[in-house]
Length: 426
Image (tube, rainbow, N blue to C red; front, top):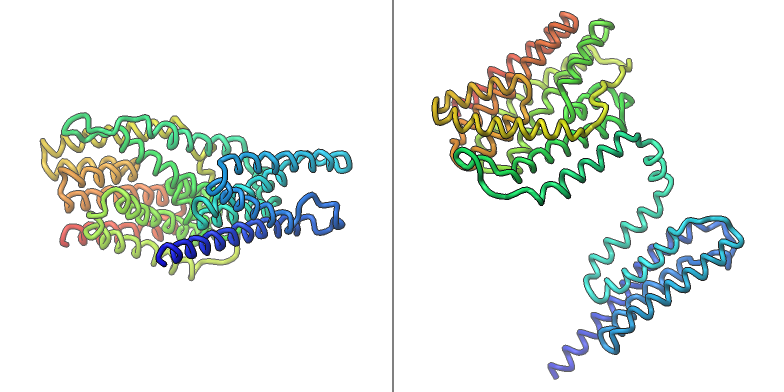
């Protein structure tokens, strides 16, 4: 009786998976049929019925392969390929369309049917839905490709190069003084920074200034808040009536640094979050809050030009320089910690923060996983971030109008004092 019950359940499961295979074929076929809806019946090579049946055929091929012969799958796959080639070859005689997207989608439908029955119906469903979405967004995808510039495509490929190719090849072992240098971990941090800058670059490129100064500042801050500060400061000098809006934008871009710091901490050393989150939240609030108040007072619908963040959102030379900077800071951090104790870390944080806050933040977060006390790392990160923001406040004061300098400088000073106080006393 138990064997009969098991057999019954197995048969029902197979039937359900075959139904899933049929449904997945129908989903893709629905999109293909809608795409060719203006063609007369019989002019379409494959519509919803054909795709549904091909999905079911894939499921049947999986069942036959498991229960009858291992040749079932390859024979039926070759048959589908042959029928597809024959159908699309005949179509070329009447319609000069050399796209093979329809043929590929038909073959994928067959494979999804096999996947649903023989492997995992959830995986098959996910693949089928993604395929349908890609097929349905032909115009949008082609539009993105047409808008993509050569250096941006080059940047995307380089991001894949440094992450997918280079990262796995690096040794994953501690090296250098105190074992603080792990080549794979250092390069992984380079990839993380490059990815965030890449996302920020394209987010701002897609929206541009059409969404306003605050939106532009938010995403420009992911790529380079320093570049945005410099650009907005110059614009305020040439167009003083916009000083208030531009000051709000600078504060938003500089405030974006702090959520990034929490993201680094979450990825590298989550144990540091309880100590870091309060000073970071206080500093963020003291930049975002005044920015919104300034915007409410001075904001209007005037537009600005977008800052030129980089000719290339990901330059391999910059990535290598950042990797070397990380290495140098890790070594100096270990040596200064040995020679001067916590004071050496704070001096390093302040000096490093003048030029870049990412490298010192990543370095201290990494060091806090082993030999550096959590409180020392938190204070060092806050000092670096505050120093970096004060440099930008100096840019706004020295390059922009006096109004821009005051509107940016006062919140920056308050943020610095409050952040260090909270980090020191907690």
